[in-house]
Image 1 (cartoon, rainbow, N blue to C red):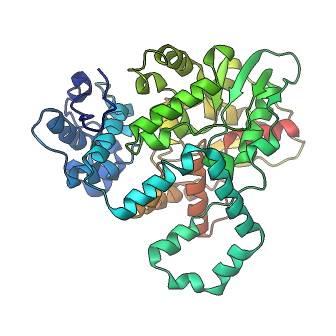
Image 2 (tube, rainbow, N blue to C red; image 1 turned 180 degrees about the horizontal axis):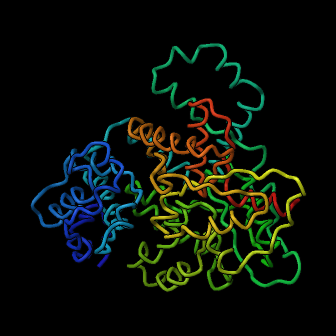
Image 3 (tube, rainbow, N blue to C red; image 1 turned 90 degrees about the vertical axis):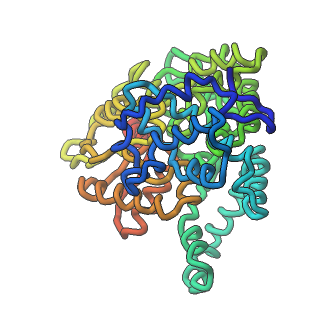
Length: 438
């Protein structure tokens, strides 16, 4: 039985109880949890949070403000799932717990309600609205207004938190994916596969060039690539923030736009989105019309590293004689490694690029603090994690840090700015695309 979509029904009480009781309380997850590692408090651990969830499911506890705050203090990095010997589905518990927190209304305030209504229910409901916002940001940045305001010192008059948020404003690229990518990109050579390309939300605004690189690499490896101009949010932002119903609506829209039976694969290049996209059948389990489609959809969704590892890649041309190797280190997106269990393929791809020397990053699968919008809602903990990550990145002496998720890319760019470090932060697929162009 899945959680009811009714706002009057408890998400945790109506969840399959076997999922709730699966935790053995062994504690093997504790050393892998960034928040527990920082505080050493049981309530800040996966085991402690599951105990709270089970107490609500058992009618021993009512959802409280403390419960809701704890669920949002969790990064949702899913490192505990990698460590768990019992195979506890913490991802499912985490989403239902946040939905429970929202159902309870314990965190409601006029400000929070307005922000969630604007972002989750309006801005990300139609990505044309997000593009309009992006165009405004692009104009603000390209005309020099942003630089002028920053140099004027007027931002120092703002509260410290607003200054921090302004400094994190991402650079909007000069073109969106629909401006760069044709709706149908033919394969370079014989067609081996027909795939769909998901361009994403933040990815489209700040890393549309990564989408273009992805399509080019797919074309060079025998794929006909279908990339509609007007796409939808995948719904991960909604599911991870307690908006279960909206996540279901967006899942249906994506299935309608990309009927899974028409493609050999549905490609995503964002680790966080991909982890959510592969579980539409879980999201739509109570929908008899969409469930069969969702099950096929889940089988067809492939992260770009995963897909290239499956089909094999055409060997890029050799580096020019005398070219010095480029030192690259790789940070693992939490939802790519812990959610999707994709760890070897990105490294294999990087090692296959001529001229790339891969240096392993200490604690490569430890969260960087981005975690969706965690760096916006929990800045203190996010900054602690970013400092830890940057210390390790700098220790490798690499000149390039690669990662397969837009949130991680933006977080690491912020870390480089804070440290004054000259490092190139890039998606692995961009390095492969550049190698092909050479």
